Structure formats: C-alpha cells, structure tokens
Amino acid sequence: MATDLTGNCIAPFFDESLFPETGGLISGRICIPVAELNATCCVPCPYSDWIYADGFESRTEVASWVSVAAMFSTLFVLVSYAVLPTKWTSRHYLSVCLALGVLCMELAFLIPLADRPAQCKNEITPNDMRSNLTCAFSGAFLIFGGWACVIWVFWRALALHLQICWEVNAGKMFFWVTLVVGWLIPAAGVALTLSLTGVSYRFGNICHINHKLGLEDFWGPLLAFATLALVLQFITIGYCINVYVRSLFDDKATTENSSGVPTYSGSINTASARQAYRRVKRVVELQWRGATIVLLIIAEVVFFAIIFVSMDNSSQVNDELFERSLPWVTCLAMTGGNKKQCLPQAKGLVKDEGIVIAVLIVLAMSGFWLLIFLGRWSMVLGWRDLFRSKILKRRHEFVSADAGHFSNDPRTYEMLDSTKTTPALNISSPDRVLSPGQAHPLRSSPMTPEPDAKLHDSYFPRKTSVRINDHIVSPETPAPAYYSPESPRFFPSRAWDARTTQARPNYLPGTAVSKDYT
Image (cartoon, rainbow, N blue to C red; front, side, top):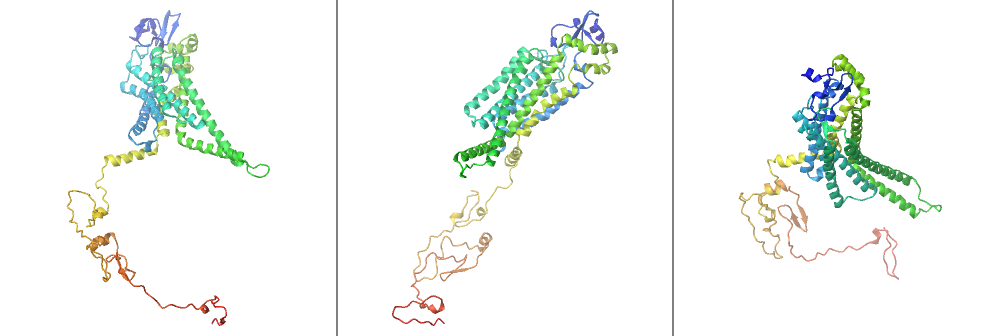
C-alpha cells in the first residue's frame, strides 16, 4: 500500500496526485514539488511524528491529564460558589464567569482523552472540524474558553481600575452590560473563527486554529483585549504606587508655615493623602487575588499567541520553507525514512519540543491558578460546616438544663415534648397579707422552693444565712415580702466632747472657755 502511494516519490514521501482533493484539511498538507521526479511529494501525516522524537504524541497527552486535574479544581470553585453561602466564598459574578471560561478551555483537553480521535484523514491529510466531530468540539471549546477568559479578565481589570482610580463602584448597569457583552463576544468570536479559519490537528490530539486568516479573526482581536486589560492593570498599579509614595512623603513633610503655626491647607492635603492611601489599601487587600490572576492569564495568552503565530509562520508552505527543509528532506530520502538520523536537520524548521509541550501544559494549568487565587480556605470550612449540619445528623438534640427540671412554677415550664406527661402543677393562690402581729412572712408564695431540696441544690447551691432587719434569710426562708410596722427606736444620745478631738469647742460669747483638752 505504501509502495503504491509513493508513486514517483522516494520513500517515505507520498505522491500527492494519488490522493483525493477533498476530505480533511487540504491546505494542511506539507508537500514539496520535485522537478527531477516530476511529482509533488508530501510528508506523511501526522507531520509531528517525523519532525519530533519518538513519543511526542504521548508527551502531549500529559497536558490533557494535567487539564483533568485542573478541571477538578475549577469544579470545586464553581460548586462552592453555587452551594455555599457567600460568607464562605465571597463570590462575585466576575469570578464565576471567569471560572466558567476556564472550564470551557479545560474541556477542550478532556474531549480527545475520551474519544481518541484519528488525527489524519489519509496518509498525507490531517483531519479538520468538517471531517472529524471531535476536532470540531475540542477546537470550539478551546476558542470559546480563550475568548471568555480574556473578556472576563478585561472586565475585572476595568472594574478594579474604576474602583481604585476613579472611586466608581460597578452598579447594576455595569453588571448587565458586562454579563451580556461578556458572553456575546466569545460566541461571536467562535462563530467568526470557525467559519473563516477553522481548526484542525496541528500537533497533539487537540485541534488548534488554522493559519489562514488566523491572525486577523482570532489572534489579533484576542491580543487587543488582552493588551487593553494589561494597560488598565498597569495604570491601576501605577496609581496605587503613586498613592503609597505620596502618603510616605506627606507623613514626613512638615505642615508648618514660617510662623510655626500649622497651615490649614497643609493639614487638608495630608489628611486627603492618608485617606486615599487607606482607601486604596483596603481595596488592594480585597482585590489582590483578582489582580494577580488577571496578570497570569494575560501572560498565558500572550505566550500562547507568540508561540502559535511563530509556528504558523514557520510552517507556511512557500519557497522559503522549501529552502529551509531541503537538508532534512534530503536526509530522509537518503536514509530511507530514518527520522532519528535526520532530527538535527529538523530542529530549525519548527519550535523546540520542550516549548510546545510547555505551552500546552501552562494552558492546561489555568484551573490551578483559579483555585489558588480565587479559592479560599473558608470554602473548605464551609463544606465542613455543611457536611456536619446537613449530612451528619446529630444523635442527640440540644436540651437546656432548665428544660430537664420540671417545676411547679409555670414560669420555668418548657414544652419539650407533648407526649411526655408532666407532673401536676401545684399552684396555690397567695395568702393574704400578714397582720402586724404576725412574726413570719408568707410561706405559700409562688417563689417558695420545691420540697425536693436535692434537685434544687443540684442547680442552686446552698448559701449561708444572712440577717436582714432581725430576720434570718436563707434559701429555705427567703426574705419576707412584707414587714410588720415597728415603732422607731431611740438610743441614748451621746454628747460630743471637743476634748476628744483637735477641734475648737463651740462656746457662747461671754462664757468662760476651758483650755483643758485632756
């Protein structure tokens, strides 16, 4: 079969004239016209198997498995946002939408693991979104997730800039505009990219955007939004640094004029600078996680774009590619398709294998950044609290100590269980007020303790008796509510003797004054 498809070409190359002109990505073929052989010879598909070392495809799957682990991190954050109360998650719609965008991007890595698609339509033609459904879905999720991440990072950078630099809090209008535009742009971007450019298997088992018009309808607009978000973020950071430096100088600078009296304008400037610093400090303390993930995702997008655009330019079939690949093609023809001997000649044709795998792994790790910077330890505490309160039911309900003590006093009665038989209440009406001749207080008062002294003492320990107005008061005999009237008591008056003190005695004019103070 291989010999028939070789045609006029030298193995391992195939003659393009022996393959149909439809099916798969025709422009993705790597073919070189050879005048001496009167044929157009094509590199076998997949192209990466011949230009990289053995096991390249299996190493690219590492990124897919990393994305699976990162997807669980993203799902943990999203489920926590959906289930736990806000006090545990501090959720915000900007964070939720960003997490959804990251999840879409991770699904692009997960789909090929479940289906194991064929990368090639035939021996020289790679599959594209029209010839392979898995390619269409993985490419669409990757483009939509990339657009969503960049757009929602831009909205977050804009909201932070307005809040810090302009003291404008995002209101309901901002919420609806960002919510609608934030999802319309990714949807429009996917539709435009798939219709004009398309996706195909470039390297690895994930479909990536094609070279044709890829810079105009995908990478260009994506980098434009990423650049705007980065500019806003740097302006915000610069403003924060400016406020901090001003607060330092205002604290050190004197606010006194030449007369030594503090000036009103200087005090106002110092106060306003300190207020601005405190306001900015508080916002930064609350938003530093979001600002950090903005920078990380923008850095990933820029890195990813640079690598892919450079790979597109280097793999574009033209006369320059023919000249650069001639030593490698000659080596394969001379060695009969021994790619190991020809790998040194192939190094200059494409990006290094380590860079390509690093791009895929970094892109798949977005979920980990989401968990690190948007996740909180309070989420774990919230799940623990939910698990304890909803799943693990307590064996014993909480019963107060007072509820376990049945008393005849209706004020201490609690209805714990209607099925329990409560003892009959022995409530007697208060006796009449004692007459003045009675010596003891009321004994049948509702406040009189129960006869069961042991049960009473278990909650209220005994106290020593005290004497109040000739009445001995104890827990068993409380103070009387009414007292008999008593006649006032008169004690023999004691004359004041000035001789016992150092004070001058009182005397009337014309009387003799005693000077004996002994």
